Image (tube, rainbow, N blue to C red; front, top):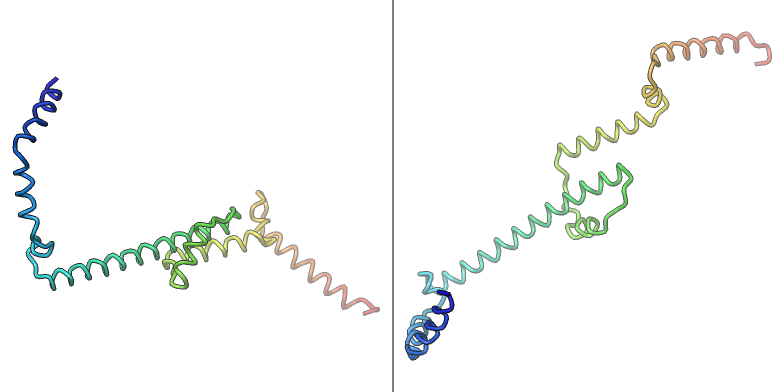
Length: 158
């Protein structure tokens, strides 16, 4: 109810002022933006230029970080054989060759690649099997090779 009264009476009071409030506002608005901030025009232009340069630098750093994150995501997608993302590819292309992975992350990726290579080898597969003694298997394999060499030396055909 109070809102209705204020709305109805407030509108009438604005009409009674006769536009005096509007004239006062235009009189104060003659100051330039530089004078309003307490600077000369030249200082204000330098300030504006500095703001633009800082914004461009922030945008470039942000794009660099986005590209680095996209690179990390693409590495993990390759590792786990997930489908590629076009957005990541475009972010990487926009950054160009400036993308550098953090040293810790590069070490982690290298270790993961090395572990994957070890797991894909025959011995790596044998370590996954439970109750298998690799040392015993190696000894048996070496003994078999030595037996083959000895039998090859005794063979008349060779």
